[in-house]
Length: 103
Image 1 (spheres, one colour):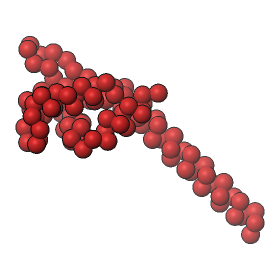
Image 2 (image 1 turned 45 degrees about the horizontal axis):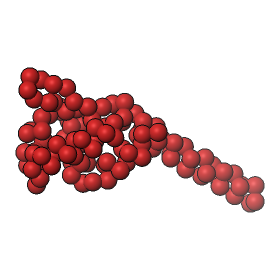
Image 3 (image 1 turned 90 degrees about the vertical axis):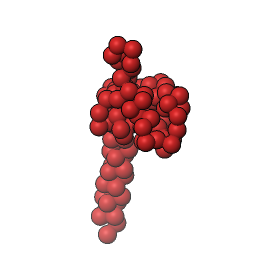
Image 4 (image 1 turned 60 degrees about the horizontal axis):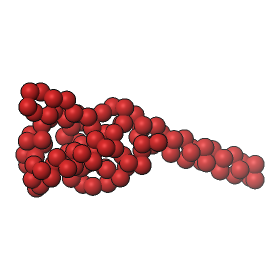
């Protein structure tokens, strides 16, 4: 059950922005830091949290680390969100059926 960590990690606006950039393309810390109002070390710390939540993974390219979205963690988060919709639709169907039987 990794989705609580993923939700907590994405609650931070800077981490969400980093994650959104990584959804578009893999990037190094330096690339990710460009245009953000935080330092490269701060971006590294945000990436550490995203990695710990299972949303990001890294690979080495020479001396650089290249970060990308980890689809396994994203799949866990999607299963959780999908379950919310299933619960809502089931409740809606029950309410509609209850109203039909009363009317």
